[in-house]
Image (cartoon, rainbow over all chains, first blue to last red; front, side):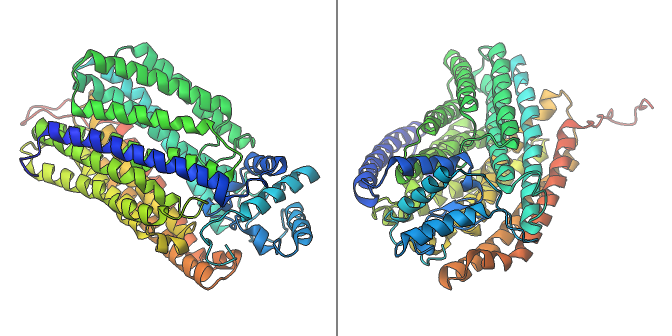
Length: 150
Length: 446
């Protein structure tokens, strides 16, 4: 390394540069926060039911098998666009019924197939969870995933 | 070992190693479910194994970092640790919180965000314990000599604590939730933890190569500078598809590509100092882990990270086994190996046995590292196949998974070998030490 660069100079560059990049990162995050709340997600649609549904999702740690917009455990299917996959955009009632029926049917008695546990959700919880999926499906994800299979 | 309070590292290392072993056990259980989906289905579902596996990793690495700090800080600061009592108390609280979380999981009690599953009371205890640790070590630092190594180390630890506070913020808006969730997850492992890694690496190199502190500390500042200049905006590579603005695609692609730079600098730094060093340190196992850590971190975090970081590649690979491959090798190289390097370096001194089982330790290095690389390769192949079938051809998720069985079987094999290597490592550091025989032909007591 160049002898021009002394330890103290390297330290000053580190502190100055890090502060600069942190402030830039914080500013862009603040803008992204604003953008998410006002542009890319459904602000009016973020109802109590969606919030409760998110809590159902968290209470049973669905993320440790499934992925949601690509983040999670990759052990079970992507659910960020499950509403689209079940035809919810065209026929919401049948998608809702199909999703609830699928969750209630677990665990499937198919030997050698990955098992989803029975979580004994109430009707209310099921409805809320599906609402959460419907809301999540509407997030502007820059056209991700590339294919509806997720 | 010059300072009596350095001995505080020993209980930290012991707890960390116990949790490391448990982490690998849960990893093997989860890997078995991938191969035999009915395995333990009635006893413990996959999601519990998986959260146990990832949480144990984070908890033992944190305890390991604390142990490393208690070991090197008195030596660097040239003064005893401020309060040994606080160190013991902190470890106790942390262990209770960690064990409490792990036990809760087995009964299905947990919160629901990935890696942040700890019940609230555990999160609070972890925060309290970590703040006690920071207070204790900061007092030590303030009372003693401030070197680049201990300053950067303490800065990394403080920043980790500050960013951890986002764990208590869980907005209803999923996109906003993800936005700040990455402020913990990414900013830790691809940001401030690199400060910790860099300072531990610098410490080991000073001790083992005998190169001038001035030179080593200059490198340290350059490395952590590269880490934060690239890593902060590099968070953008997690913001491509979560509802954030489109500008994160070019920004995240460029800056996360630059995240390779600090890892390249670390590997150059380690080998350059090793060759430059005049001193031939007797603990060659510790030197091996040190060089190995820098190298594997470069491949695992740097190369495997770059593999899927460009937005137009990530569009197809996001959320596949490619991510799992990268995650395994990156954590192993950058953080697991670095903590194991410090433990290997410190243990003979903590146990006051000069010659120790180096050969066994080096065997464990080669076996563990080869097995982790093999695991990474199998997951990478699985991820590439998955990306093509699912994201390009649009084949159904479960159908795709059934095509990957062979890779998951090989991953399980690799995991089993890792477990064996971990046992060898534990025997090497905690097991019987060799006796140093007197020089020459003096009679050896029978």
